[in-house]
Image 1: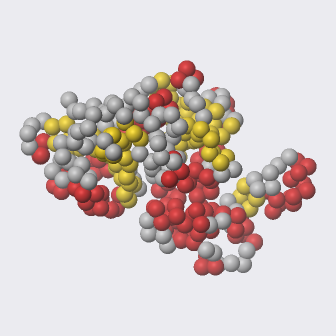
Image 2: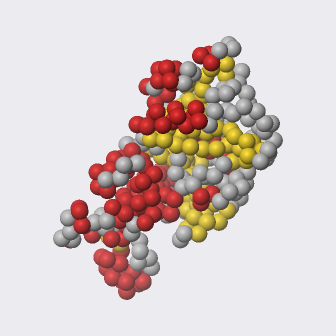
Image 3: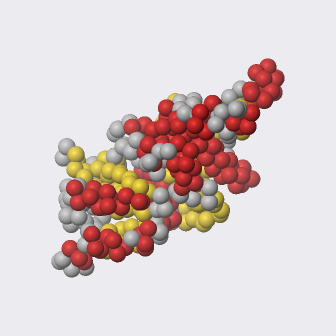
Length: 328
């Protein structure tokens, strides 16, 4: 039986807008670090314990899957193999790490050869649901609205948490209906997810890493390429119909009538338009299930978790990175 983490009293003390802030664990006793990971189709995500000012915290890191050796170097440099996880004997070769994702099967031999550890493969969706429930039920400040560039914390009542729709955005997208702790079913999904977005981003912008793509998107203006309602019917008609002039009508729609070639567009604007297109589309696909069933919707990824309470008001839940500003 492996060591357990005491999650009671967990809280986020840093600004969630800073990327991947740690989660402080005030009741977790100091000990050698623990490490678990998810090896997806695009990224490797790590969660591990570390000491900070005499207190323990959960920290997060990510690497592109093609940079597996960088991940190994990070694990060694952080000393994350000290007495990690479960051991079936006294030797390092008997040490195991908890892991999810298809890559935990594909790269099991690499972990044994280069780190001297085995991967204990867990069910990915069960882990995703458990993690989302943990955030929603235990971490103050993990739930917030994010509209018009403003972030406001909200309270989630444990009595009104279930049922909800959990949209797990990875290389592809899986949509789960969660009815309780460890009670869920996959209701649908789509192959057009983060992997598709990053693949197109590499072709269109020349970016070489996922982080570079995100940084580009924050500097760009998607409206250089995206067609909005005002472009179609004018500002006065928008006012008469009660529509926002900036409502997105067609992603990349302005390109149709433009004389520009791909090289004429800024990589930053292309990245911003891609980000907008994919986040809008995933949210709309999810709402197609939510609205007829009048349940809550949560969008979850390594980048964001969002919720549409009762299928109406857009809200965000949990740790986020800068992608979330495009999701409403």
